[in-house]
Length: 116
Figure 1 (cartoon, one colour):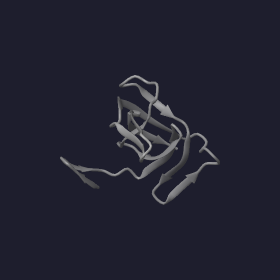
Figure 2 (cartoon, helix red, strand yellow; figure 1 turned 90 degrees about the vertical axis):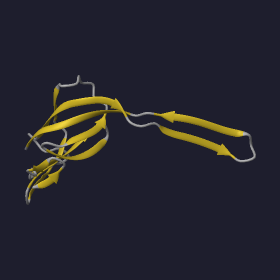
Figure 3 (cartoon, helix red, strand yellow; figure 1 turned 135 degrees about the vertical axis):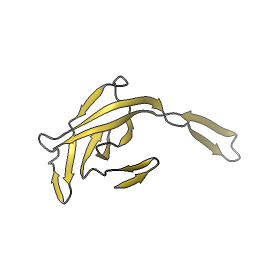
Figure 4 (cartoon, helix red, strand yellow; figure 1 turned 120 degrees about the vertical axis):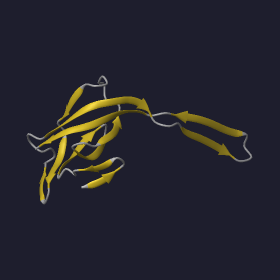
């Protein structure tokens, strides 16, 4: 059991390592994660089938490279942009200054089930 604001939640033993947007994430049912933007509507349920590993307590299945038959179901909670990252370049004594900003887009997912 894990204490969170407002009470306790039961910690899921089953977890998975998924690959999306060129990154890897360790997820369990009930968690919310922010991943690189996925073309899906808010409220839509998606299935991520690129599962690299599935663990359940002391048992661990590792794929070569993917675990056969494993999938993760998630619901799109929100689409948005991260905070602005400021890029500032300066060459001293050369009259060179360059300022730039970037806001990366993301998709927030709520993991509903890990099947493996």
